[in-house]
Length: 548
Image (cartoon, rainbow, N blue to C red):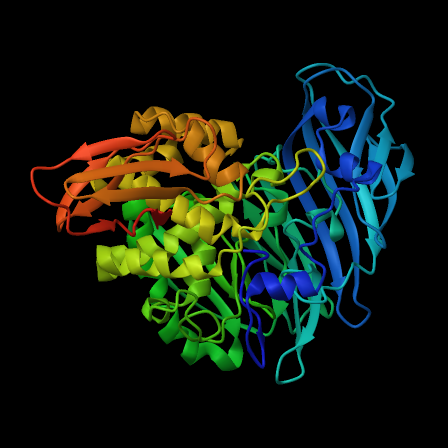
């Protein structure tokens, strides 16, 4: 979820207009050395592979302060002695220790280079303890402008949460802050005042009372991306249920502010409905070992792995609004459905570089229509996704610039969803399409991927050369235009406004009869036995038409 949701400011604004007004989506071409250090696989990152984190911290709500350490366990891939760890100002990396020896650390902006003194032999499993503290960046408009949200609930009790997509997990804890390397598992220990509860990822394995504080120990047994790690601290009430899913019994836990318990018990009935629909379309929920949690947060919501955060006001739609303008968007709670869809696309299948974030957002925006398709019928899902085209800006390509932590256009949501809806039409068989989505989540299970891997997979599985298709929709802002003319019994047609080699077939109606045609850049001709009275292009294809 990050940067194309509608924000309510007296009335519903276009999300991109709002974000542009805030300067959050301005196109950045003046990248700095820090951007490269943050966004690339530097030599100081490449030689070691993450295996385990133990994040052990104390959160002081009164002073908005976090302190503690992260024990980073890693496998040596290539012998080297300089390790890059990321931690953003104003947080301070205090020291690094390996095998009881304090190490020299060179600080360069938000990157910290640790000089290891012991031999780093290939295939060794080593660890380093990184101590830190500080007042983390406070989120101004979470989750779009992330950091830590230090809020109060209506009873005046602390209500705190992290959100850091794009900005990076290193805004509040030290880590290897690049998407390409997911840790294989982790423990999260969070000490808070005893009247509060901390909810993080995975399963709660222990609660320790220490004086007037409590430490909540959570364990994640699956690979997890850095931005998917979270803390949620508040006066929580908990209720739970068990879902009988494709992987057996799945524990569902809900943590909500105590005074919202009854509302949550009603609204969260959509969680099993979500799981039913998405396991149908995408296959087994990817994190049975870690359970599924929905956790109330002091902002709209975020796809934190197995710990999805929720702040949609216990109402359907997006803050009560339908993003499609069709009415179908009010049939489900947007945050429950969208953010949970990210468990498959973002948390299971994760982009290696944030430039490819369309992989997360296009498939997940598309999942909204598939949820409707499952529960309300194919026409409902199609009407919804087609309705969301009104949100598309076509301002810049869906893919960003690589190696500088730069995401693409916010159109990765609904332009991406309509691209995938178009691809479904090209497959022509919904059972085959569903099997492809299933296979995708198996083939790339708990992996980080590139756009090219996804393109190659879909081309192979659909048996269609989709290279020009993806060049068109991912790498340009052009919408294909089907130009045509009618002369009695003769239809002439071609594609314009297209990349080289774009030859997508399309379904049309001629005199109310379905017909597939295969336009190219050159004019094609189709001659019928009778006069052509009318032409109708299938609206399920995300194209424009022009009669000449």
